[in-house]
Image (cartoon, rainbow, N blue to C red):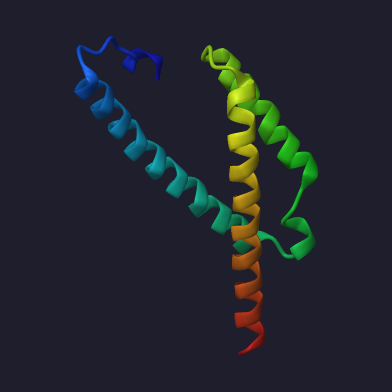
Length: 105
């Protein structure tokens, strides 16, 4: 990813680069959300949705990845904690819907 870092000639270059990255980020987040849905489908217990050890593992990995790219891990951690919490809420909703649908048959 670092290979894309370039010196921009003007603000249009900056904005174009940011817009392109934002589109990629949204696509990656959509992919991540797909796998959250897979987790909701696979897990048999609502208690398995929130896994504190897994949360801390994800945060540790994201901090390490940030450090490896030269990014301040303290910048990314709160963003990721919010993403993880929103992902868990989404997974709970999907899990509950899936089990409510099973019960209505």
